[in-house]
Length: 165
Image 1 (cartoon, one colour):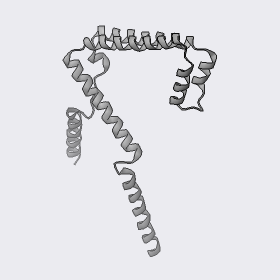
Image 2: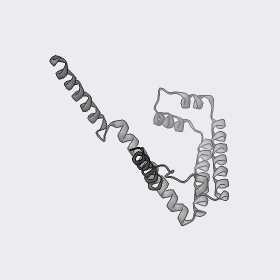
Image 3: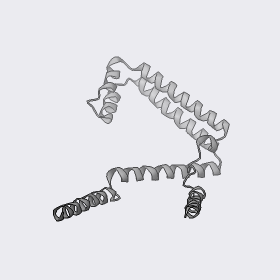
Image 4: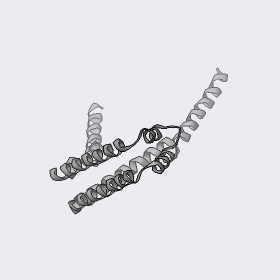
């Protein structure tokens, strides 16, 4: 009997391992990108941080207070802030957007078809995981209802058993 259990357990682990159950489904970014591309990504992040800091430093106290006002929704805060921006601040925002777009385009030109395919697959996997998480949290797949039904059935059976004793 123990030998059968051991064989079954080994077969089960083997199935999980070669079926992909225990392996990571996504390649980490350092395995998708070349070292040069990773440097480009880090440079892009630094540039975005610098642009963001420059923009935030250009804001007046009133404008910073608008951003900190959590009684407004995010969209309302953005609209209120945009109304108060000077032309120089608008130019900084426009320059930041263009800079980010140019960096993204330059980076995408360095990607090989194999990398593009790996990134598409990674994006799809992330999207599927998000959908599963949303479904699970909302109970869309019926798990919550099934669990409630099982609990109710258990209670009913318990009630039927108690009077007989």
